[in-house]
Length: 332
Image (cartoon, rainbow, N blue to C red):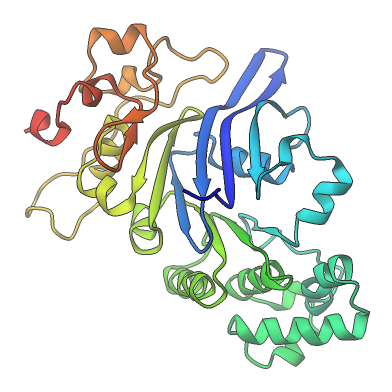
Protein backbone atom coordinates (compact mmCIF):
# COMPACT_ATOMS: atom_id res chain seq x y z
CA UNK A 1 0.00 0.00 0.00
CA UNK A 2 1.13 3.53 -0.73
CA UNK A 3 2.36 5.71 2.10
CA UNK A 4 -0.31 7.28 4.27
CA UNK A 5 -0.91 11.03 4.26
CA UNK A 6 -0.42 11.13 8.04
CA UNK A 7 0.98 8.31 10.15
CA UNK A 8 1.59 8.40 13.90
CA UNK A 9 3.91 5.69 15.19
CA UNK A 10 4.21 4.77 18.90
CA UNK A 11 3.66 8.33 20.13
CA UNK A 12 4.42 9.08 23.79
CA UNK A 13 3.54 12.51 25.21
CA UNK A 14 4.24 13.31 28.85
CA UNK A 15 3.58 16.12 31.33
CA UNK A 16 6.08 16.23 34.22
CA UNK A 17 4.42 17.41 37.45
CA UNK A 18 5.48 17.68 41.09
CA UNK A 19 3.52 14.48 41.80
CA UNK A 20 5.06 12.51 38.95
CA UNK A 21 4.98 12.15 35.17
CA UNK A 22 1.56 12.12 33.50
CA UNK A 23 1.64 9.77 30.51
CA UNK A 24 -1.08 11.57 28.58
CA UNK A 25 -0.38 9.71 25.32
CA UNK A 26 1.14 6.29 25.82
CA UNK A 27 2.17 4.47 22.65
CA UNK A 28 -0.52 5.66 20.23
CA UNK A 29 -0.32 4.65 16.56
CA UNK A 30 -2.75 5.42 13.74
CA UNK A 31 -2.87 6.62 10.14
CA UNK A 32 -4.96 8.89 7.95
CA UNK A 33 -5.36 8.66 4.18
CA UNK A 34 -6.35 11.42 1.71
CA UNK A 35 -10.07 12.20 1.80
CA UNK A 36 -10.69 9.96 4.82
CA UNK A 37 -12.52 10.84 8.03
CA UNK A 38 -11.18 9.30 11.24
CA UNK A 39 -13.08 9.56 14.49
CA UNK A 40 -11.27 9.55 17.84
CA UNK A 41 -13.52 8.81 20.82
CA UNK A 42 -13.14 8.20 24.55
CA UNK A 43 -13.93 9.70 27.93
CA UNK A 44 -12.50 13.02 29.07
CA UNK A 45 -8.84 12.54 29.94
CA UNK A 46 -8.34 9.62 27.57
CA UNK A 47 -5.71 11.51 25.55
CA UNK A 48 -7.71 12.46 22.45
CA UNK A 49 -6.93 16.18 22.38
CA UNK A 50 -3.33 15.76 23.54
CA UNK A 51 -2.75 13.32 20.67
CA UNK A 52 -3.76 15.85 18.00
CA UNK A 53 -2.06 18.74 19.81
CA UNK A 54 1.10 16.62 19.65
CA UNK A 55 0.59 16.24 15.91
CA UNK A 56 0.21 20.02 15.61
CA UNK A 57 3.15 20.59 17.98
CA UNK A 58 0.96 22.88 20.09
CA UNK A 59 1.57 21.30 23.50
CA UNK A 60 1.61 23.67 26.42
CA UNK A 61 4.57 23.48 28.76
CA UNK A 62 5.65 21.34 30.50
CA UNK A 63 4.14 18.89 28.03
CA UNK A 64 6.53 17.33 25.52
CA UNK A 65 6.76 14.51 23.02
CA UNK A 66 8.96 11.91 24.73
CA UNK A 67 9.24 9.53 21.77
CA UNK A 68 7.54 8.37 18.60
CA UNK A 69 7.19 9.54 15.02
CA UNK A 70 4.59 11.80 13.37
CA UNK A 71 4.99 11.26 9.64
CA UNK A 72 3.26 13.75 7.37
CA UNK A 73 3.93 12.92 3.72
CA UNK A 74 6.91 10.95 5.00
CA UNK A 75 8.33 13.88 6.98
CA UNK A 76 8.71 13.47 10.76
CA UNK A 77 6.95 16.42 12.39
CA UNK A 78 8.21 15.35 15.83
CA UNK A 79 11.69 16.43 14.70
CA UNK A 80 10.68 19.50 12.68
CA UNK A 81 11.92 22.90 13.81
CA UNK A 82 9.54 25.62 14.98
CA UNK A 83 9.87 27.59 11.69
CA UNK A 84 9.16 24.41 9.71
CA UNK A 85 6.06 23.72 11.80
CA UNK A 86 4.84 27.29 11.31
CA UNK A 87 4.88 26.68 7.57
CA UNK A 88 2.91 23.43 7.87
CA UNK A 89 0.55 24.44 10.67
CA UNK A 90 -2.41 26.33 9.25
CA UNK A 91 -1.48 25.75 5.62
CA UNK A 92 -1.25 21.97 5.25
CA UNK A 93 -2.68 20.84 8.60
CA UNK A 94 -5.40 23.04 10.10
CA UNK A 95 -7.27 22.70 13.38
CA UNK A 96 -10.68 23.77 14.62
CA UNK A 97 -10.43 24.19 18.37
CA UNK A 98 -12.87 23.01 20.98
CA UNK A 99 -14.72 26.12 22.13
CA UNK A 100 -16.06 28.46 19.43
CA UNK A 101 -16.84 31.11 22.05
CA UNK A 102 -13.17 31.63 22.96
CA UNK A 103 -11.31 30.54 19.81
CA UNK A 104 -11.37 33.94 18.12
CA UNK A 105 -9.62 37.14 19.20
CA UNK A 106 -12.29 39.61 20.39
CA UNK A 107 -10.36 42.73 19.33
CA UNK A 108 -10.03 41.92 15.60
CA UNK A 109 -12.79 41.79 13.03
CA UNK A 110 -13.89 38.36 11.89
CA UNK A 111 -12.94 38.82 8.24
CA UNK A 112 -9.44 39.94 9.22
CA UNK A 113 -9.00 36.79 11.33
CA UNK A 114 -10.36 34.43 8.69
CA UNK A 115 -7.97 35.96 6.16
CA UNK A 116 -4.93 35.81 8.44
CA UNK A 117 -3.73 32.36 7.23
CA UNK A 118 -3.76 33.68 3.67
CA UNK A 119 -1.61 36.66 4.62
CA UNK A 120 0.82 34.45 6.52
CA UNK A 121 1.06 31.45 4.19
CA UNK A 122 0.06 32.75 0.77
CA UNK A 123 1.49 36.29 1.03
CA UNK A 124 -1.86 37.85 0.15
CA UNK A 125 -2.20 41.57 0.79
CA UNK A 126 -4.91 42.69 3.22
CA UNK A 127 -7.46 43.54 0.53
CA UNK A 128 -7.11 40.23 -1.33
CA UNK A 129 -7.12 38.23 1.89
CA UNK A 130 -10.35 39.93 3.01
CA UNK A 131 -11.99 39.21 -0.34
CA UNK A 132 -11.07 35.53 -0.07
CA UNK A 133 -12.24 35.48 3.56
CA UNK A 134 -15.66 36.76 2.50
CA UNK A 135 -15.84 33.99 -0.08
CA UNK A 136 -15.07 31.32 2.51
CA UNK A 137 -17.55 32.78 4.98
CA UNK A 138 -20.16 32.48 2.25
CA UNK A 139 -19.13 28.88 1.50
CA UNK A 140 -19.64 27.83 5.12
CA UNK A 141 -23.16 29.22 5.13
CA UNK A 142 -22.86 32.63 6.77
CA UNK A 143 -25.47 35.00 5.27
CA UNK A 144 -24.45 38.47 4.10
CA UNK A 145 -20.82 37.39 4.38
CA UNK A 146 -19.45 40.74 3.21
CA UNK A 147 -21.20 42.55 6.06
CA UNK A 148 -20.41 39.84 8.61
CA UNK A 149 -16.72 39.97 7.75
CA UNK A 150 -16.71 43.56 9.02
CA UNK A 151 -18.12 42.55 12.41
CA UNK A 152 -16.37 41.46 15.60
CA UNK A 153 -16.70 37.91 17.01
CA UNK A 154 -18.99 39.03 19.85
CA UNK A 155 -21.56 39.97 17.19
CA UNK A 156 -21.68 36.33 16.05
CA UNK A 157 -23.67 33.51 17.62
CA UNK A 158 -21.83 30.39 18.78
CA UNK A 159 -22.76 28.48 15.64
CA UNK A 160 -21.62 31.32 13.39
CA UNK A 161 -18.31 31.58 15.24
CA UNK A 162 -17.75 27.88 14.67
CA UNK A 163 -18.53 28.36 10.97
CA UNK A 164 -16.02 31.21 10.89
CA UNK A 165 -13.42 28.94 12.51
CA UNK A 166 -14.09 26.31 9.84
CA UNK A 167 -13.74 28.98 7.15
CA UNK A 168 -10.40 30.00 8.67
CA UNK A 169 -9.24 26.40 8.68
CA UNK A 170 -10.24 25.86 5.05
CA UNK A 171 -8.88 29.14 3.70
CA UNK A 172 -5.46 27.76 2.74
CA UNK A 173 -6.79 24.48 1.34
CA UNK A 174 -5.22 22.16 3.95
CA UNK A 175 -4.71 18.48 3.31
CA UNK A 176 -5.68 17.60 6.90
CA UNK A 177 -8.38 19.24 9.01
CA UNK A 178 -8.52 18.40 12.73
CA UNK A 179 -11.83 19.15 14.45
CA UNK A 180 -11.58 18.92 18.25
CA UNK A 181 -15.11 18.65 19.65
CA UNK A 182 -16.43 21.08 17.01
CA UNK A 183 -19.98 21.04 18.42
CA UNK A 184 -19.12 21.77 22.06
CA UNK A 185 -21.49 24.30 23.70
CA UNK A 186 -23.78 24.39 20.65
CA UNK A 187 -27.45 23.43 20.70
CA UNK A 188 -28.50 20.27 18.85
CA UNK A 189 -29.86 22.08 15.79
CA UNK A 190 -26.61 24.00 15.27
CA UNK A 191 -24.62 20.84 15.99
CA UNK A 192 -26.37 19.10 13.10
CA UNK A 193 -25.64 22.06 10.79
CA UNK A 194 -21.93 22.10 11.73
CA UNK A 195 -21.61 18.34 11.18
CA UNK A 196 -23.35 18.64 7.80
CA UNK A 197 -20.88 21.38 6.92
CA UNK A 198 -17.89 19.21 7.89
CA UNK A 199 -19.31 16.35 5.84
CA UNK A 200 -19.67 18.69 2.86
CA UNK A 201 -16.10 19.98 3.34
CA UNK A 202 -14.79 16.43 3.29
CA UNK A 203 -16.78 15.65 0.13
CA UNK A 204 -16.22 18.88 -1.80
CA UNK A 205 -12.62 19.65 -0.89
CA UNK A 206 -11.34 16.08 -0.38
CA UNK A 207 -9.87 17.19 2.94
CA UNK A 208 -8.77 14.35 5.23
CA UNK A 209 -10.47 14.93 8.59
CA UNK A 210 -9.79 13.87 12.16
CA UNK A 211 -12.91 14.31 14.28
CA UNK A 212 -12.56 14.21 18.07
CA UNK A 213 -15.81 13.74 19.95
CA UNK A 214 -17.57 12.09 22.88
CA UNK A 215 -20.62 11.47 20.72
CA UNK A 216 -20.64 7.98 19.24
CA UNK A 217 -23.65 8.88 17.10
CA UNK A 218 -21.63 11.62 15.42
CA UNK A 219 -18.87 9.13 14.63
CA UNK A 220 -21.37 6.65 13.21
CA UNK A 221 -22.71 9.26 10.81
CA UNK A 222 -19.44 10.98 9.90
CA UNK A 223 -16.44 8.65 10.00
CA UNK A 224 -15.21 5.73 7.92
CA UNK A 225 -12.87 4.60 10.68
CA UNK A 226 -12.84 5.03 14.45
CA UNK A 227 -10.12 4.89 17.09
CA UNK A 228 -11.21 4.36 20.70
CA UNK A 229 -8.81 5.70 23.34
CA UNK A 230 -8.57 4.91 27.03
CA UNK A 231 -5.95 6.10 29.53
CA UNK A 232 -3.71 7.50 26.80
CA UNK A 233 -3.71 4.26 24.81
CA UNK A 234 -5.56 2.93 21.78
CA UNK A 235 -8.13 0.42 23.03
CA UNK A 236 -9.57 -0.45 19.61
CA UNK A 237 -9.59 0.77 16.04
CA UNK A 238 -11.13 -0.26 12.75
CA UNK A 239 -13.93 0.55 10.30
CA UNK A 240 -16.72 2.33 12.18
CA UNK A 241 -19.43 -0.04 11.00
CA UNK A 242 -17.49 -3.10 12.16
CA UNK A 243 -16.43 -1.64 15.51
CA UNK A 244 -19.95 -0.52 16.39
CA UNK A 245 -21.60 -3.74 15.21
CA UNK A 246 -19.14 -6.06 16.93
CA UNK A 247 -16.88 -4.28 19.45
CA UNK A 248 -13.73 -6.18 20.32
CA UNK A 249 -12.63 -4.27 23.43
CA UNK A 250 -14.69 -4.25 26.64
CA UNK A 251 -14.34 -0.46 26.86
CA UNK A 252 -15.87 0.02 23.41
CA UNK A 253 -18.54 -2.52 24.30
CA UNK A 254 -19.30 -0.61 27.52
CA UNK A 255 -19.41 2.79 25.77
CA UNK A 256 -21.94 1.52 23.23
CA UNK A 257 -24.17 0.21 26.01
CA UNK A 258 -24.09 3.44 27.97
CA UNK A 259 -25.99 5.43 25.34
CA UNK A 260 -29.63 5.19 24.16
CA UNK A 261 -30.24 3.19 20.97
CA UNK A 262 -33.21 3.40 18.63
CA UNK A 263 -33.00 -0.34 17.97
CA UNK A 264 -32.82 -1.34 21.66
CA UNK A 265 -35.52 -3.49 23.19
CA UNK A 266 -38.26 -1.57 24.97
CA UNK A 267 -37.46 -0.67 28.60
CA UNK A 268 -33.90 -1.96 28.27
CA UNK A 269 -31.89 -0.01 30.88
CA UNK A 270 -28.73 1.89 30.02
CA UNK A 271 -25.58 0.42 31.55
CA UNK A 272 -23.22 2.91 33.17
CA UNK A 273 -19.51 2.11 33.17
CA UNK A 274 -18.65 1.49 36.80
CA UNK A 275 -15.64 3.15 38.39
CA UNK A 276 -13.48 6.02 37.19
CA UNK A 277 -10.70 6.45 34.61
CA UNK A 278 -7.28 5.60 36.06
CA UNK A 279 -4.66 7.95 37.48
CA UNK A 280 -2.21 8.51 34.62
CA UNK A 281 0.65 9.13 37.04
CA UNK A 282 0.14 5.75 38.75
CA UNK A 283 -1.86 3.62 36.30
CA UNK A 284 -2.95 0.11 37.27
CA UNK A 285 -0.86 -2.88 36.30
CA UNK A 286 -1.70 -4.75 33.13
CA UNK A 287 -4.62 -3.45 31.08
CA UNK A 288 -5.65 0.01 32.38
CA UNK A 289 -9.34 -0.87 31.93
CA UNK A 290 -9.24 -4.06 34.02
CA UNK A 291 -10.55 -2.45 37.28
CA UNK A 292 -13.77 -1.54 35.42
CA UNK A 293 -13.96 -4.49 33.03
CA UNK A 294 -16.75 -7.08 33.36
CA UNK A 295 -14.79 -9.59 31.25
CA UNK A 296 -11.36 -9.41 32.91
CA UNK A 297 -9.25 -12.48 33.46
CA UNK A 298 -6.15 -12.89 35.62
CA UNK A 299 -3.82 -12.10 32.72
CA UNK A 300 -5.48 -8.70 32.28
CA UNK A 301 -4.31 -7.70 35.77
CA UNK A 302 -0.72 -8.80 35.19
CA UNK A 303 0.11 -7.92 31.57
CA UNK A 304 -0.71 -5.09 29.16
CA UNK A 305 -2.04 -6.64 25.93
CA UNK A 306 -0.55 -5.38 22.64
CA UNK A 307 -2.64 -3.78 19.91
CA UNK A 308 -3.21 -6.75 17.62
CA UNK A 309 -5.70 -7.94 14.98
CA UNK A 310 -8.88 -9.41 16.47
CA UNK A 311 -10.67 -10.00 13.20
CA UNK A 312 -10.41 -9.23 9.50
CA UNK A 313 -10.59 -5.45 9.99
CA UNK A 314 -10.21 -4.59 13.70
CA UNK A 315 -7.35 -4.11 16.15
CA UNK A 316 -7.78 -4.22 19.92
CA UNK A 317 -5.73 -4.37 23.12
CA UNK A 318 -7.61 -7.16 24.88
CA UNK A 319 -6.47 -10.60 26.04
CA UNK A 320 -10.09 -11.82 26.07
CA UNK A 321 -10.90 -11.11 22.44
CA UNK A 322 -7.40 -12.00 21.26
CA UNK A 323 -8.17 -15.46 22.65
CA UNK A 324 -11.18 -15.63 20.33
CA UNK A 325 -13.96 -14.83 22.81
CA UNK A 326 -16.97 -12.81 21.57
CA UNK A 327 -18.04 -10.06 23.99
CA UNK A 328 -21.69 -10.03 22.92
CA UNK A 329 -21.97 -13.78 23.47
CA UNK A 330 -20.08 -13.61 26.77
CA UNK A 331 -22.46 -10.93 28.08
CA UNK A 332 -25.65 -12.78 27.15
